[in-house]
Image (cartoon, rainbow, N blue to C red; front, side):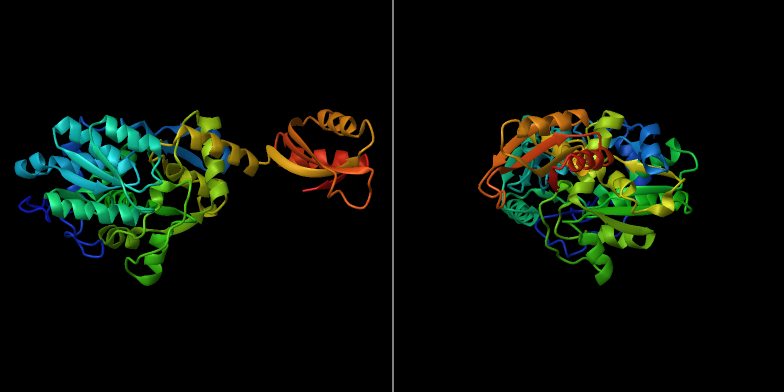
Length: 426
């Protein structure tokens, strides 16, 4: 049943209400179905192909829902378009404001420009530069405020009250949740006999929308959630039985780093969720690397968390099952991407740093590099330390950074060095 758009609160908007207040009635499956009609032709029906290499790497049959191919690089366009399309003419002329770590802001900025609606976005100071610059290029007013999402949200609420703008909550407004739920409808049409969907979780809007859509039409499909280690507000809400404020830490999955699960999102998703797991930074970095290498796709940290959980063996019950992974965004700063790839290579054992104690006599270093070459390692960097090499004045400690084929190869290199009398310190 469609809600009557007779007030800002019915639309899921507010002019400064706190997150702990429920802004509207829960979302229904009918809302998702209507949202799909409303955004049709304006948002990409993203492909959901099977991935042979990721299936081999995880032991499941993996399908990738490529929301990173949306015009602004994330699924957030769906909810943004749905919410903006429901504004009354007076409010549409006045404009909207939102707090966002980036992707919600991008979705609003892009579709606001298409619909002629002024958009103001408040981002935390740590927001990726690529996202802030893209919002400006799309015509949005961008304000960087606060050390975290909460600071940006407080600023957005203040602007909403001062300027009469409609505040559009990025993950808990019912129209946002309904828009994100259209992904679930597409998954069921694109993947026959899907067994499970593993969804990245921040505030819970994506999880709530997908879970409601899929569980309504096919209750047998299992829904799993994945949070970053530095942002576990949904798990904390599940422990408390309600949305609670949590501290967040810097994470590669910056799009998931919100201080509180959405009350509406939590109420919808919690009863439909099979299980929620946590992944750490090394696991996220490795998942991003695998996607780049195996699928030739760029996916941001938040979008890679589902694969991270699968690669880390945190969902063993999905072995052999048909699993959909929503790659929910691809907006990662190129500078950060290069660091993440390097971090992923370290986590994979393909870049390693170790210490070796060698003779300080002529030829000592040459012997070491010759052994490394014979073992198939590529030397990236070598540093000497004579002062702290121990009691032997004729010894030197060498710090080596090498490229390898992986952890097994690294172990072979260490064994080869030790057989030649070179002491290795990892």
